[in-house]
Image: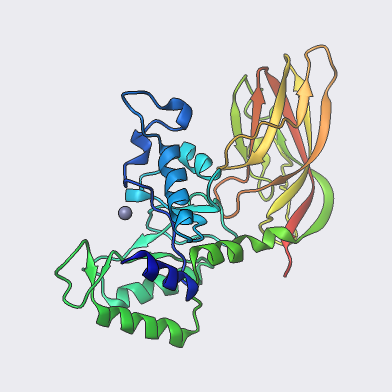
Amino acid sequence: MNVQQLLELEAAGWEICSHSVTHPGLPFLPLTYADETPAAPNSAERELEMSKIGFNDLGLNVQNFVVPGSSWNDDLATLSARYYNSAASGGKYGNTLPLENRWWIRRKGVGTSHSVSDITAWIEQEINDNKWLILIFHAIIETEDLGYEPWSETKLAELATWVEDQGISVVTQQRGLELSVFSYKDLLHTPVQPCRIVDTRLAGGAIPPSGIRSYNVYGAVASQGGNPAGCPSPKGEPLSVALNVTAVPLGNGNIVAYPFGSAVPTASLVNYRSDAQNIANGATVKTCFNCTKDINIKSNYGTAHVVIDVLGYYYAKP
Ligand SMILES: [Zn+2]
């Protein structure tokens, strides 16, 4: 395929994603430019940025990344945010609505052994679970005897017809990203009676320096030291939560609150000193949607007990 054909595909509504320059195992490279050495002069950051620059220089609007060999980690996911709107890696699953982590979008590979009905069953399952699915096809060829995991043109045509007949929308990675995060733009707040969800004095003990605890923000919270009767969320799983976070200091430090499964932010929520009384602060914290836990609480530098009350929940607009 030549550059002119890529430009024509893009003009016709297809999206060209970056896939690195040399298709390396990115976790095995130095992470950033600053980590490069004469012996290891090619960093993952160079692979990420240079492939984007290369495409842009050809006139292609490349905004999203597809991970080579589906070899990925949290550091790379964080790094890719410098250059891309999203990164898609491997996996056996669909993606949640709204999306959990746009720098770790899941894709599912189609192999030669898979029939059309295998794929339609996958798609139906994901729709039932309120998820969306990215399929990886490696080689589309009639005879299935060339390339990696080839799939026949006839099967693809049959699948495409089925998808169209079902009225299932097929979109680019960029459009999928926009559709699956849009509900965060416009949340509705539902205040609730303040309800205790965490008290480390009752469960878990004080959080030590650099300690991270993961919590749920609604439902059964007694095991976290919260209200024995639980804290009901009036409209089901929230996308964000209004909290009052109190530190009971046993040293000097600060408390950070952030979504479960996300990178630790640098901004602290409560700064505490051992010579002070209990210190509280209010915050709106995004929650991890469709995850085993909702939020993480980290104590930096010092040890503190933490008490958290929920004051309200945020939901997507119906
Ligand atoms: Zn590849």
